[in-house]
Amino acid sequence: MRRTAVALLVVVCIAVLPASALAVSITNVVFDPPSPANLDFGEIVDFTFDYQVDEESRIFGRPLTGGAPSFAWAGHPSPAYTGSGSGTGFFTIQDVGQGIAHVDQVRFRVVATDDDALLYETFVDVDYTLGSAVIPEPASVVLLLTGLAVLTGYRRRSGR
Image 1 (cartoon, rainbow, N blue to C red):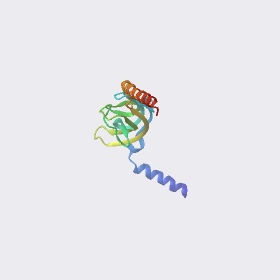
Image 2 (cartoon, rainbow, N blue to C red):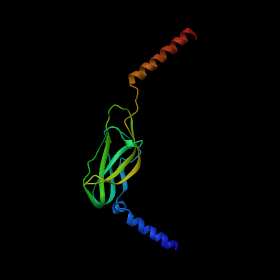
Image 3 (tube, helix red, strand yellow):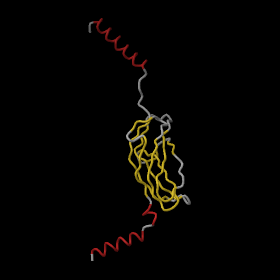
Image 4 (spheres, helix red, strand yellow):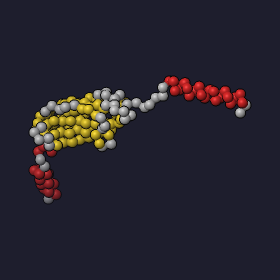
């Protein structure tokens, strides 16, 4: 009785779920450079992936920061994909004077080419830091050291 109920449940689920929900996937995502990485603004992150789609679709990989689209990103256009195979894409973050940027996920979306309907979405965790920390100029460091030397000399002369 129990096996019959489980088998019936599986048949009902397969019949109720749309075919595209069962056959659309993105797998084997590989990033270049690999994550984690520190990158310069404008440096491109390439990726490859394997896909399975039942209808003509476009596949996009977009950088996210804290669950929202990363600020000042640019990405690849998508060709039409059908069936199964391997695909490629890229993204980058542009410097717009905001300091350091961080990408913690890449969202992959599969959309139908005929009506832009979302067919599939998945997220891949990454760790990319773009930009660099503010490093003091050499002249500022020399000025600071000169000031400390003057204070030390003054203190020695005055006997304090």
